[in-house]
Image 1: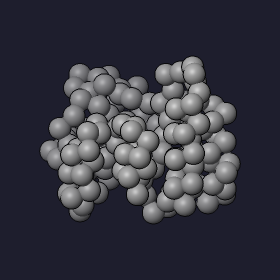
Image 2: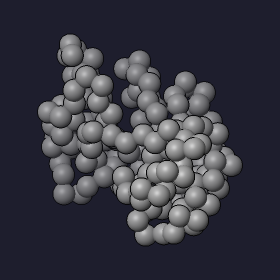
Image 3: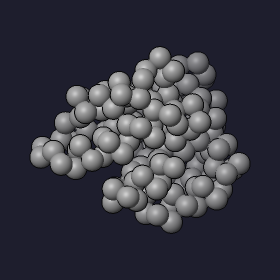
Image 4: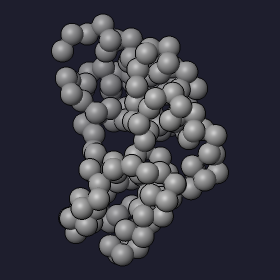
Length: 155
């Protein structure tokens, strides 16, 4: 499990959570918080901003805020309209990333996932891993190795 890997490496992460998943698995969310990790809003149901009106998008984000009290927001797929950015910036700090592990892709091997992180991470990088069934095989391989590599590397 991702939380155990982070504990073993004495690493902290920010989990951008989907509200519907928090509602279904409150015990996992509580464990994330209990272990000292930060959480952020990732919409109620992984809604892509490009596909919906601002009103629908804001309503979805605010619904998630009912379960996840945070000032951090990450748009699913990194897709968000400028008008949505303007509206959300009033309440949230929008957090993007610069390194995608690719852990969710069935076309990427666990080793390729690891190399995506190792080759592209710089000082101050924000790296995305996913804690999901879809990403499990690649994440379980790449995350502990990436953490070990990055903890030994001096930026």
